[in-house]
Amino acid sequence: MNWDIIKGNWSQFKGQAQQEWGKLTDDDMARADGDREELKGLIQEKYGLAKDEAERQIDDWMKKAS
Image (cartoon, rainbow, N blue to C red; front, side, top):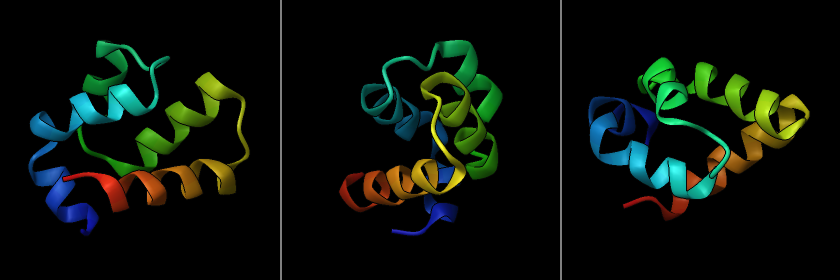
């Protein structure tokens, strides 16, 4: 799956993203609004991760998102 599909259907995927990253709030999900870079920044901020680790987690999540 590519990110354009996730971005276009963000309202469907944001619940799955919140399950994956439980520290992200509804406000965080609204702020990300399907923007991969914004989501990555929020994950880095909330979990104290390096950029490459946040990127890896997003890639892993995308593989299992349906």
